[in-house]
Length: 235
Ligand SMILES: Nc1nc2c(c(=O)[nH]1)N[C@H]1C(S)=C(S)[C@@H](COP(=O)(O)O)O[C@H]1N2
Ligand SMILES: [Mo]
Image 1 (cartoon, rainbow, N blue to C red):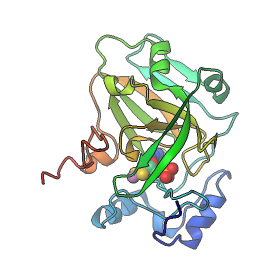
Image 2 (image 1 turned 135 degrees about the horizontal axis):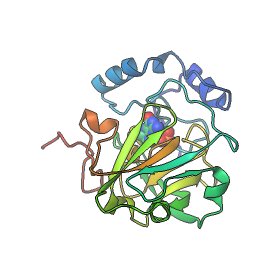
Image 3 (image 1 turned 60 degrees about the vertical axis):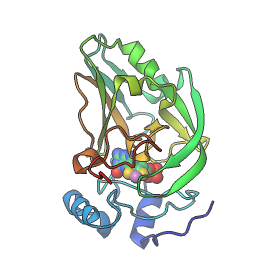
Image 4 (image 1 turned 180 degrees about the horizontal axis):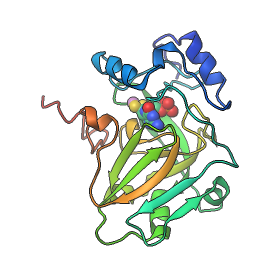
């Protein structure tokens, strides 16, 4: 499962290893959100690969933000809001106390790399939606992240699938900061860009609001196999 890929910049490695401090600089290649977006879009790797994760078993590290604020047991919160009867603000311990679902599925990035049979474990998104009570005029869900930059979205129908979870574990251990911990989304049937890392908000919305990469031409309905990931690619 080892994958030879882009060499990992020394500073990126140090940045990943150093996660857990108050904030982390990922290195010069990643500095400047707009810069890195623009340069990555013009390259062959539009979702901004930054290197193989050390010990990541083929995973590549992605972040559109140049630094990630630290969130831990004490400070982490997940807000459920929008068109719901009851907004909620969960701590990690609250999420852990809910029924947990383990999925073992393949991870597929739209840029081509893939990691088979990866276990993810956490709370079904449908469970959180049921607890909140979705209002009749809602059709979609929007996700926000505490990196302050990334967003994603799903239709309510997609969001209620049994293979869409708010993951607390990945590869059978707590989701690491580099992989989006303490909590990330995992949308098993779709390309991995749907699986927002550093998840901090679930907002029930009237309509689908395209996510971060979707503003740059990626498919909102990112089914692996049924979509090539790009809505602007008619060929
Ligand atoms: N917050 C946030 N979530 C994100 C991204 C990101 O840049 N920021 N990149 C996405 C993309 S394109 C991929 S392939 C995966 C990468 O997850 P990994 O870093 O755990 O390999 O996260 C997705 N979720
Ligand atoms: Mo990706």
